[in-house]
Image 1 (cartoon, rainbow over the protein chains, first blue to last red):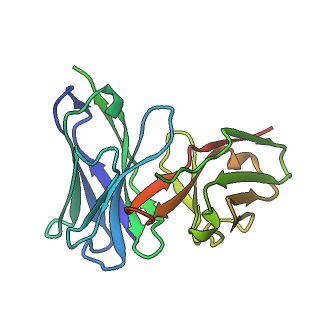
Image 2 (cartoon, rainbow over the protein chains, first blue to last red):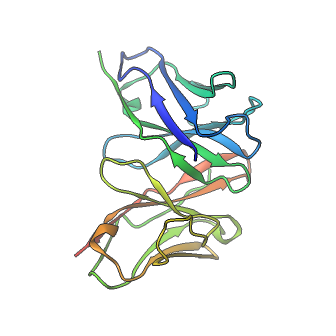
Amino acid sequence: QLQLQESGPGLVKPSETLSLTCTVSGGSISSSSYYWGWIRQPPGKGLEWIGSIYYSGSTYYNPSLKSRVTISVDTSKNQFSLKLSSVTAADTAVYYCATSDRTGNWFDPWGQGTLVTVSS
Amino acid sequence: SYVLTQPPSVSVAPGKTARITCGGNNIGSKSVHWYQQKPGQAPVLVIYYDSDRPSGIPERFSGSNSGNTATLTISRVEAGDEADYYCQVWDSSSDHRGVFGGGTKLTVL
């Protein structure tokens, strides 16, 4: 059974780059059945899809974040990563990684989430 | 861009039926997925492909999708069902993107 775990700094300064990694266990990130996605949730607000990546490296990004987002995959480590540049306080959120079914595009399972605060 | 609209809140008495709607332009032509999120926890998939239930999700949870509205129905509501519920689609109309509704807070009276 797939399990996902986010890791990375919990505090990032404004204008810097937020970097998170999601480690996948219980299965291979090279599976042809899945995309791997990032979703965030500002405190007290709803869910926002950030982007998704296939093991081959093909990516889809939220147009509202596309200029600042890079998602990459490291098949040797069974990990995928998120980089969000030029962050502001508006990027403060719980960041989740999740598996996305390649045909139906639902997200399951999710990691537990990690809170990233943007503050000087 | 594609927009999903949910009511901010729904209230229901224990044992009754709760219906949470998700509105979108011709949403009936898309596959809708639903998530339950309890405070401090990650979302959990409760319905996929409009009406399919993942293993472990009670039969009390069901879904439908037609026209401009998808609906999550929770029968015989229990106190433990109190949570935020989100609908989600994958929009392939212009570019490929995931879209979430704004979420509905289900309160069990």
